[in-house]
Length: 270
Ligand code: DGL
Image (cartoon, rainbow, N blue to C red; front, side):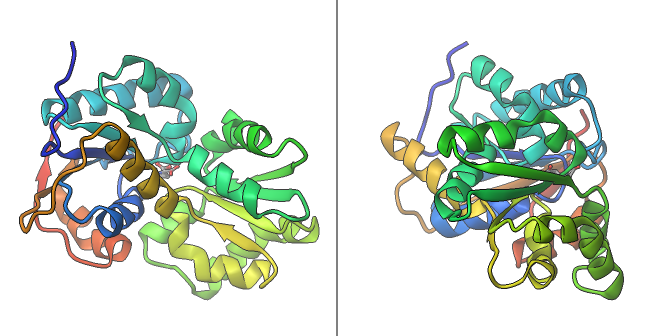
């Protein structure tokens, strides 16, 4: 089925839960006139420990929901889903699909001088090897060190962004990367930008932290422009947040990710 692309249609964004809101925050800054439909799969989070088959199945279901809302493009604002399901979604989806891996990998490739790049992400993202592969496409001389950080997501969800426990966990995960001399570290999970301050204090001032959210928003703008489907300036925008579990916790925690409260939150059972 061919989807008719209308500039006034919303941009569809999805994540396993809250983390994708770090991408929405940048979309709102870069594309203030656009309508957005966000889907957070709060009933099935986390994705970061699940298999490729499961992530593909979940992602397909969510894209199906977004298409019902007539989205003009889909942003996979989840590193795990981008690592494991992006190729499939791109093939099947009748509207443009953007993930978060390439923008981050490209930025890291441009930033590194020592050609030693660290990647931190969920276990499934690291296991997929997708960041390392894409980095080597953009910078063939790069040496990659990968570190899964499974405790970071629950710490962020709990709002423990810079306390002693979080700092100790960060040392546990990051000390080896620091010792290895990486000069660039990819924050390969949508939750990690909230830990930037703690991660930066462990890695020290010589290490560039790469958060791809801004690059993703710029890439979305570029695609909308070349497809001629940028929405015209408007004083009225609609942002709808769909969640697969009850909305209250999402509403409460969303402020931390977006920096502003969310109003239009609805439950959508899959
Ligand atoms: N949003 C996921 C990611 O960026 C992290 C949370 C999860 O494990 O589902 O990989």
